[in-house]
Image 1 (cartoon, rainbow, N blue to C red):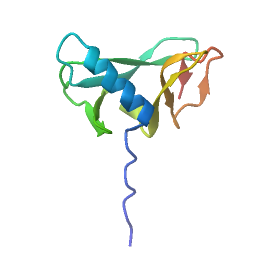
Image 2: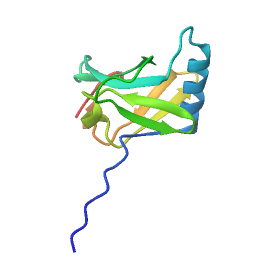
Image 3: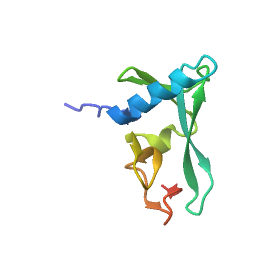
Image 4: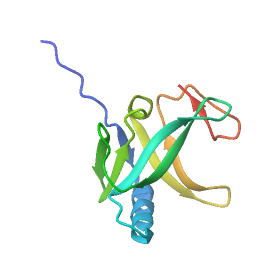
Length: 116
């Protein structure tokens, strides 16, 4: 009997990321439904992540609801983010969202961009 493989979650969210998302939404000066995550062509390796406020769901966006927050995935980024983990780090070296992405094949030396 053949079974279909379960599709991996588009994105998982750590507790630290969820807490930071909640904090950002609470500080927003307009109604926000969540954060949008995507990728843009830039950097020496070709692509970089972006995170922005989402006021509304766009057509074809995947919605991830977990740990009390909503993350919308830009449709152009879904195939690049599939199976990724979104985290938040705040230490003496950096402060921001980070991504553990199983689709990455290489990352530039400064860590700002990646390739798949």
